[in-house]
Length: 180
Image (cartoon, rainbow, N blue to C red):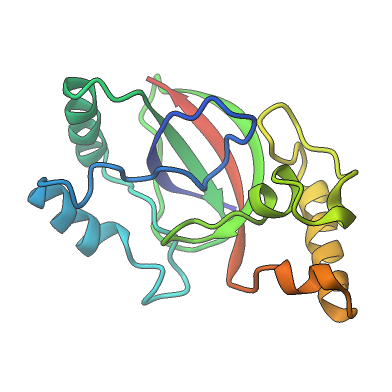
């Protein structure tokens, strides 16, 4: 897996602390230079399946953080590790990170998370007993693989809940929160 980059997200105090959320919340809010950079350098998963929509430019992240702080926005920064090739990043020295868990979500756009929508929201009854950690994520890679296999099995049978299972290009995220 590769450390692809960072996502800035408005802080949410709920159980689920994964990739789906209010990501890149300053975009399309009168910050043309942020929007332009985002569209040219981050939002690439729709056009290239080797990409995940994250940022590997610390200067852009710092600018986003400065604007967020000036607007008193409570945010967090997620480090995203996936099997996607691009982009790639090395965290600067002295960055402290905390492991959150594994998510299963889209590589960009809404970052729709099957973990949030199928398990945490309790929408799919077959997943009611699947254990998740204190961040609403999987603790291990093997747990997320088991979940993926269960989702695929449900998609093959006829049942009411099958229609609620989102189809799409999901990827596994190993997520960390940066302590700034």
